[in-house]
Structure formats: structure tokens, C-alpha cells
Image (cartoon, rainbow, N blue to C red; front, side):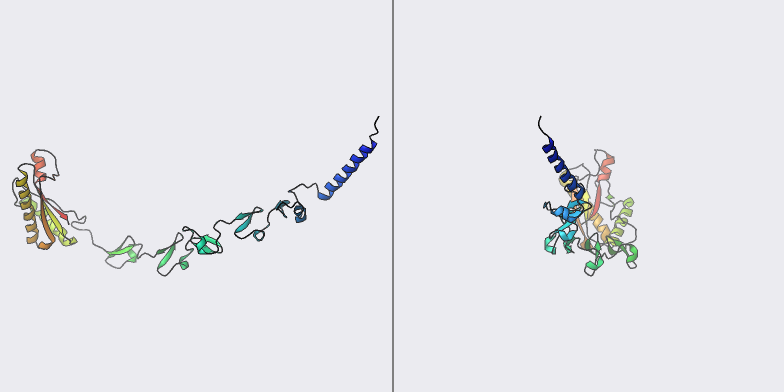
Length: 262
């Protein structure tokens, strides 16, 4: 029978040593720690004991340029910079080594500009009608002269219609002529008077008839005081009908003179 006493004694001795070591170290194993010294002995680049765990850093001072300490690890700083040249277009200004917006407040902008969502923008002339003087209103941040609603407020003029094969302005069409003259007085500008016919007759004949109708309306405007230099005429004959069909209902609408802005 083999004597086991020496082996037992060796094991007992090792157990005592290990147990004593565990007692001294508080049963620690990496990365557990109580002091920085416990971490330094492992030499794994985590020399700081933070919350009983070995970490790479305790604060930003332990990290290199352009890095910060986050949860015990050194990480690259998002938007780190040393000058504006290091920044991108959407964060163009370097402040405290961080890329940021063009402005944080109106004081960061030049005179006549204000900070809007991080960008310097020109201060608008107005934001409401109250910002403008009497007789003006605010439109698209600019003060423009206010023209009260009235005749021809939408600048659309009325057609002047004619009887079959006629270029004399009918009595019932005179109100349309007068309405258009008011439009010209209110808005100014130049116009083109277009002559049109129905589909009956030759192309050549209808082109000439359309021209006579356009001139008749131009002459009526001129007689009402519109400067002749503001008007020119053109004939389209039957080529631009506003109503389709070969019947009087369509023809009566197509026999007309249209006044449009030039």
C-alpha cells in the first residue's frame, strides 16, 4: 500500500497558500478590482479601477487628442475639430473643439441677419401687414403696394362676341368692352387682341374676318382712352375654338375677340 501522506501534505499546503491568496485579494479575478494597483498588475491597457472594474480611463484626461472617456473606454469625439477647416457644411463652425451650426444666436450673425435653425438668414422686411406702412401689405416677407379688390381683380378680361359674318360690336357686348377698359386702367401693361371665327368659310376668309374683329375691339378701347401703343392685334381664324361642335351653340361662342396680356 502506497503511503499518501506526502501527497496529501503537498495538496494541503497548496490549498492553504491559494486560500490565503484569495483571502488577501478578496476572491478577485480580472477585471474585478478594488484599487488601481489591482488593475495595473495585469498590464492589459485598463489600469484604472472604476466601480470595482478595471477600465481604460476614469475621465477625459486619460484619453488622447480627439477622444473622450465614455463608460471607461476612450472613444473618438463626434465632430471633434481644431479649426473651422475640420468641419463639414452642415456643422461649419468649430467651437470648444466641437463642430457646430453656423450660429447659436443672433449675436453670431452679421448686422441685418438673424439666427434661424442654426443658419444666419437675412432679416425679412416684414412678417405681417402691420410691419408695413399705410397703403402696403406684407407678401413673401416684402412690403408691396396694396391694390384694393375691384374690377378685374383677377386680371382676366372678358371676350367680346359677334354675330355671324360680322365684325361690328353688338350692343349687348358693350359692357364687356367697358369692363376690359377698366382692367387696362387698373393694371396697366400691354395686351394682344385676338380675333376668332367659327368653322364655316374658308381659312383665308376667316383669317381676314378675325383680323377685322380684333381691330374693331382695339378701336373701341382706343376710343375709350387706351393708348394705341399698348395694343396689337392678331387673327387665328377658326383654328382656336373654345367650343366644339357644328351647331349654333358652339359657333356663337367661337365668334369672338379675346384680350390677353402681352
